[in-house]
Length: 349
Image 1 (cartoon, rainbow, N blue to C red):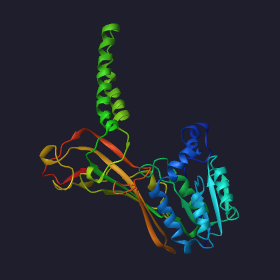
Image 2: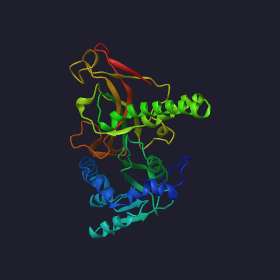
Image 3: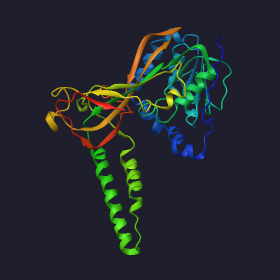
Image 4: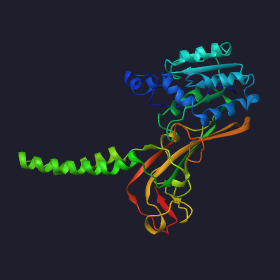
């Protein structure tokens, strides 16, 4: 049985609105943005090694490169011996992918299709899906929705995903930079300005706006401290080892499983390095906790019926010597939390 899986119910149907194009898709249509990703040596080396290093698994196969950009992964697959590669790209950079296939003498193998995977058709089922779909902290940008759609509709039941699995990590850290450091004071300034505004209104108009203060404060807290902030930290900034908070098997995962990192009632502990083995200083010989920092890794392991001969892992963590264009994502703790020397873990939910 090599028929398609039943596509899962999903919110987005693949039609790019003008707002979506302006806010997201348009940047991927520019070579300036594509070059940033092509310059990411850790990223490109991982995909090259995973595809070319497993040429025996690609030989004679039909491959889908989802979100192909300039088409380099499709070309890697063709060089590895794929019989046919369908390179699907939602933006106008598809024309550059087509030019790349021609200039590299692979246009007979690589067919570039401009459009979203939800709106285009493929003439046959595929043996392998190759895709660089990952956003910051893995799931930002929500391209995994389209990846799972493509898997369910076009991948043979014994097919393989490259990458095949993904993991999300969180770790406690003591790190700051100008942008991170400004978040807390900017939030406090907003609250102070609001309180002055409330007093001025009482004086000028005789109206008490203080009943709005709680809501305004929470909105300001969410705006300045409730989101994540891109950072590039060092291993020495970590206060404890990372915890894997989410693991995704891309051959079997459902949209529901990918809609959250953990359930609200799932408690877990983050261990802390002993004083002297991590961030030192602050209260009792430790630096304070200023953030939880997140990153991800993906593994290229093939499939049960066609395991990778060469297993490759791509990590965006601080241990990656080359760094990546993803960096890490910081979830700021404000005010910073002092840590005692006798504390060995942080309880999280």
